[in-house]
Structures are given as C-alpha cells and as structure tokens.
Image (tube, rainbow, N blue to C red):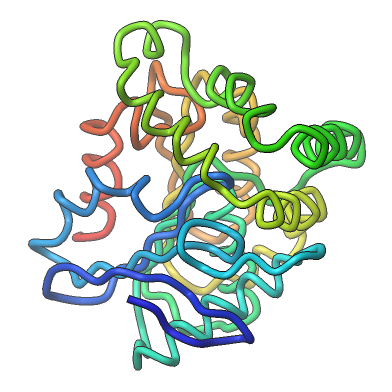
Length: 259
C-alpha cells in the first residue's frame, strides 16, 4: 500500500490488531528487515512498517535529505492513516528518525525502542560518509555491499547464516542510489544528545555488544540522556541485532512494549 505525504509516495504495510506499533528500518534496507519481528508482534499490536524516503517502494527524489525531513515523512504517514498515538521501534537510521520525531512532535509516541543507533555523529566521521557517497555514485550500490555486510554482522553469523546475509545483500543492492546518497547526507548531521532530556515517553535502548558502527557506549549515551530510559545489550550481535539474535531481541523489545 502507498500513502501520499510530504511530497512523496510512501510504501507501508499494516498487520495485526491492537495498539499501534510503528517500525522503521536501517539505511539500505526496507520494511522486510522486520519480517521476523512482525510475526512475533502482530498478535498483540497493529504493526505499521514503512519504507523510508529513498528506500524500497517509497519515492527516492534526488538531493540531500535531512532527519527533520524524514521525521516529517513519518508524521505525514501517521496523519494520513489517522494514527494519533503509537509505540515506535527504529533501528540505526530508523532510531535517528524516531528520536528526531519524538523531539519535533512530542506526545505522539507511547513508547520508544531505539536499536543500534546513535544520537550524535562526530565530524571525524564525515570522510567515511563522503567515501560511501562517492563509491555508490561512481559504481552503484554493489560497491558497498560486502563492506556493509561485514560491519552489520559478526563473522561467525555470516558463516552460520549465509542466507540471511544474502537477503540483506539483496536489499542493499536494490536500494536506489539517490535514496542511499540522500540519507548519507542526513545521518552524519545528527546531534541530538543535548536535547534528549525532552523526550517524554518510556524508552528502551538496544545495543549489540559487537556493533562497531553504533557501539554500546553510543547506546549508553542515549540511555543516560533520556529520563528513565532502559538499556539492553545483546551478546554476540553486531549492527542488525534483530536479525543476528532475533530471540534475544524479541525478548527485550517485546517485554518492554507490553509491560
């Protein structure tokens, strides 16, 4: 299904019955990243997941995006579907969108789950993001597939579950270059840590203990900045902790969302 909002067509899916739960994926993935979690949660929630601007079946306009713009996309989708209140789960870029939205539109989230994400990217990371933009602009998305997979998963998992890595690799390859580039301009500009004290809803921060992109100390910084936030660290998991350790991920997130 598609909704029109904030100047683009946004692809979304809704499954289950109950209170609303919105799920937002990482950079270079799409809503299918959450398949396993939706299976676990749709008996208790009305799950809304969507493709971020520039990804999957959502429009991918050229140009640099901003996190405010991505939060406005989410708000437009919620308004178009009549969702006044919801819980929200976002991983990596999805977590950044969630924090930005919570600050820009206070009162819309009942609960907030921030997974494998950060509230601040330092200026020292700018060359890394520029390198990724240059690589895909010159050679297409294939140029970043292998490097991304080795950052997102531990080596033992890649050896044990090559079919999962293959599925994620396909999502990366199918991400429009314009969408990837647009979001690569938005992500390194995040700098929310000093504002997170204004987040008003119960929050769980999830980290993977092997995540080099958004390590545990970044998750702990978010936890300390948001009043009353909880922190759960998943062992033997890197960046896509929901795929690498789904049982543990589902235990922590499901317990938080339903208690």
